[in-house]
Every structure is written in structure tokens, then in C-alpha cells.
Length: 129
Length: 160
Image 1: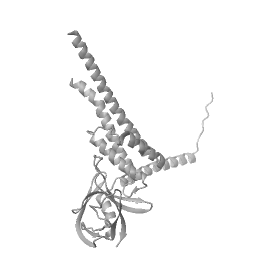
Image 2 (image 1 turned 90 degrees about the vertical axis):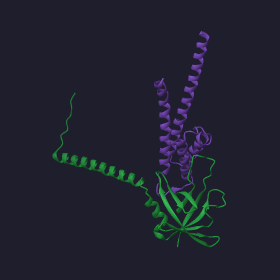
Image 3 (image 1 turned 180 degrees about the vertical axis):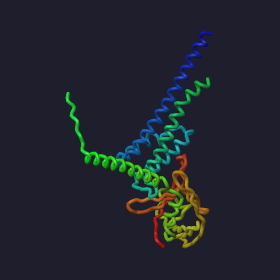
Image 4 (image 1 turned 135 degrees about the horizontal axis):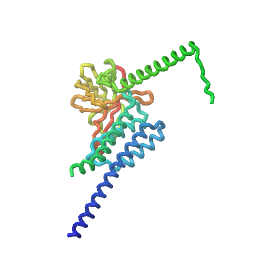
């Protein structure tokens, strides 16, 4: 009986650790994406913008770091990517010159919302238990 | 320790008063300007789009280029469109010299606008400027799926 209890405790500890690690990774991903977006919005030179664009593509957009079920962040990312390409291409939106910034704000908001949800989730689980 | 006190004359006090009035009024004016600029920047309505699209009923939009290699299935090569204020559009097919009248309408979403062009389809519409040239861009609505290609159609304005 004692052995079973100990092995159950170890299994629970391992699964809990894995869960916490994955949550930490998720939070870190959203936080990095949010920071990068903020940098892109604030960038002035085309060179720095091109560098940030390549970082954005390689670290987030092309590699699928955002889970497919998070449709709001994925859509915000996609719209932001198109706006970024317009900016790099020298296109100015006549009706809304701040479109890149707005799309970036939407993406940052989507990231912050996910970070909030991740932070809130363990508390909710604890409260339910 | 001796504390030196400085006494100001009535004239100086008046000057200070005026200065503080001037500073506070400057702050208020800049606040009003900032708010009005912000409001202007976020006030794109359907009317703004329609104004540019129809350009007082005398502007033709000629399909100039597309971003992806396409067979121009939806919007034909060298197509010219005249948007009228009665929500009818005259489409001139450059290759076959055909002329069609279709209906159009515009739907304003929060961050973009959608142009419905008769049976042809629905597109996100943008008005852009590059190297002093004005473009109307129509593109398929952006979705989450990355495998769906977004074709961008660039139209340039030309007078009647």
C-alpha cells in the first residue's frame, strides 16, 4: 500500500511539474511575442523593421509556436504580418496611416489576454479542487 | 544659516500670472488638438471609403497588377471599373471590349472594410499610396489559415 501511495505521489508530482513547465513556456512565448510586436511598432528605420520582421517570422509566424486553438492571436498575427509587409514595401494607407500600430495593438492585446488566462487557470483549478 | 528672501514687484507677479495662464492654455489647446487628431485618425467610416472609391463619379479604376501569379480568374486582366454613387458599377472588360453593370456595396468592419462586387466576390478594400502613386487594393479576406493564398489586386485611378 505504501509503495502504491509513494508511486502515485511521484506520478502526480511529475505530471504537475510538466503542466507547470508547459504553462510557463506558453506564458513566456506570449510575453516574447508581445514584446517583439511592441518593438516593431516603435521601430523607425526600415533596416531595424526588416530585422524584426525576420525575427517575427522565424520565431513565431512560420514555426507555429501559437497553438491552433488560439484563433484570436493567430488572426491578429496574420493581420499584423500583412500590415508589416505593407510598411516594408513603402505602402502608406491613405485612410489610416497608423494601421500597423493598430494591428500591433490588437496582437499585444490578444497576447495579454492569453497571459491573463494562463495565469488565472491554475488558480481556478485550485479553487475548484 | 541665512535664508535669502526675494521679493517680487506687482508687475512681476502680473507677469507670472500671465505666464501661468499662457502655459495652462497651451496645455489645454494641445490636449484638444491631440484628442481631435486621435478622433480623426479613428473615424474612418463607410463614407470615407466611398468618397475615395467614387471620387465624385468621374474616376475609373484600372486593374494594374496582382501580387500572386494568378490567371486573373476573379478579376480580369486590364479590367476597368467605374463605381457610381447609386451602388452600380460599370465593368469594362479590356480584352473582350464587353461592358457590364453590376451592383456593389461596402461594409465597414472595425479595422477594415469589405467591398462586395456583384457576382465577382467580396474583397477587403484599402486605399494606398506608394511613390506618389495612388492605389486601390482589393484582396481576399484575411483568414487564420496560412495555406489559403491571399491574392492582392492593385488598381490605379484613371480619369474618364
